[in-house]
Image (cartoon, rainbow, N blue to C red; front, side, top):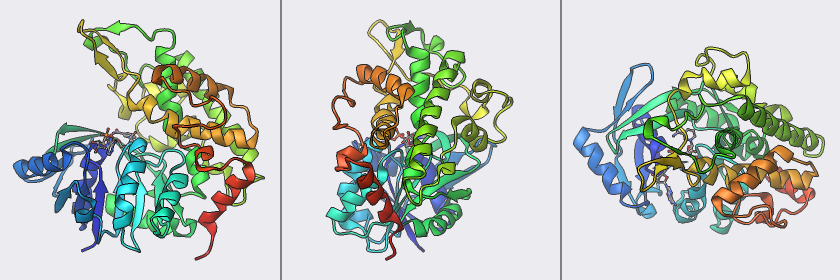
Length: 396
Ligand code: NAD
């Protein structure tokens, strides 16, 4: 029986454990955060396994063989290592697991977000490990834990998910392996550069936060008044989302002739992506606004908010919709656009608004410090970006 190790103990990890178990894999979990390893173990023991509730009423239950906060106990022997984590946890997790990876192990992030390849290649190289990894364009599910270690609910499943692999020649094989593991279609795309630009979470999450909260940052709400997130998309928000998507299309168009092996068609405009990923879930596809507002996979989710001492809720700008998708998304694309000499006014306006909320300057000077932009990995010219990109096509 092959072994898969899942890194993380959040929503996505809760879905992966029963699915991988049902597909015939031995499942181990690396969960060093807080006391998650112990709580997962206890929850599964109480419940006779971890139950996943699908949106169509199906259920599945499955067990992890071993959960641990020590990578030496759960990484050796794994053929596949899945990072089911927010992007800010990729670096520390990869640093911890790299020394324990088997020579043939494949690691992958669900989802990769931007610049995953720069960071992962560097960490594996420092650990003298072969660079074999993949990234998904998005998490295949919208999912939330209902009871920790016991039950998770899937709100929606994407129709198809794009995947990039390093080396690129292994993408088709990895897509088939994952398809068998998760019973979903995965579509190999040309390169990690395309995956970084095609990350629609970086448009949707910060773009909707901006659309709904710009100029209303201090507004407070009773719990039931917290605005709906996706269903709250109005014409102002949709225009901003469209402008952000257009900026990214401009970057892809300029890179296309300059970067061998990069296919701009892999970078779908936002509207095309939403309609493809949520085929069957959208009641009215006529506009970008209606594709969000009538998307049943998005129904009911609200702006992340926190209660103050007065019991009123305020938008939570520290939540991952900005804290993950700005430094590991928009700022990465902005760094690439900078190297390609392309202006990105819509991305810049959202990044600058988010900088105030996150209390961090990403665009001061050219360092992009605190992000996963190429400049952070010493890629300071388009020629260096191209050189780094070409590594994934090298024969070995
Ligand atoms: P989550 O918030 O449930 O996962 C958090 C987990 O990450 C924690 O439980 C912990 O195990 C780990 N973690 C957090 N900080 C850490 C740190 N500093 N060091 C080590 N581990 C740490 O996240 P999720 O909902 O499972 O999402 C995983 C990824 O999928 C994220 O990139 C998210 O944006 C993306 N995503 C999620 C959904 C969804 O519906 N859940 C939908 C689309 C995309």
